[in-house]
Length: 288
Image 1 (cartoon, rainbow, N blue to C red):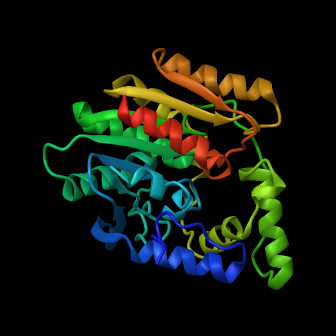
Image 2: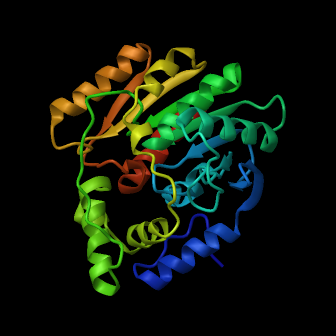
Image 3: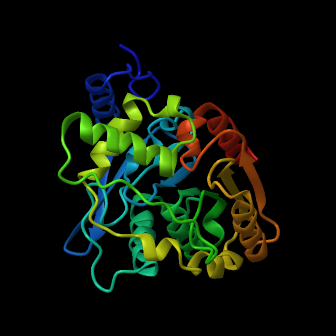
């Protein structure tokens, strides 16, 4: 039987759903305190630790096309952030610092006390990744920010199609449109797996992370981060290239030594759209 972490899902909804289920069954499930419940962590592989933090309105599934490549020689941890996926809601007051505290406390429980860790965060997850890295001190080997928020204005604004109350093909069409508006540049990449992940996320989201994404909280935290800092954006992250240049400029302003790269042809969810390119690039970061 094919390894569920590395095998490619067939291109239809049922096969994509089954593949995600096999991928989840292959994971080690861990839980740490989160408000009145728990924060759910999933782990694959063995070796040096890599923490992957998904984006807003997402879950561990954002990393579905990357887990196999990264878990071949690393312990990959992909938790559901508080208020998202299978994790419990964030206790009041809700904020990026409170979420980062929960993630950092959980990380200390799931890792050995002296273990070092590479951290990567996508979009809203980049905000939390930077705050966690600032708390973790010299245990952080690298921080990689992908299409991150938390840098302050200017910010892009995207109007999404309402999915609620839609069913069948109409709901599927709304997911497809939203993925093209917000996440992916190429219509060819809006495949069965992307649509299934989007559908599952739409049923699990309870946290509105928008205000945290547009805040400058990451910008303030970056100077306190130990280890190497990398930042990746997709070429088509934003329609306005001047806005993309402004975002990369804000990152360099906060962290002048950061290695910044733009991935050609990709949109916001670049590690899905250009998975092979990202996997190779990130493995180079991990090996450096």
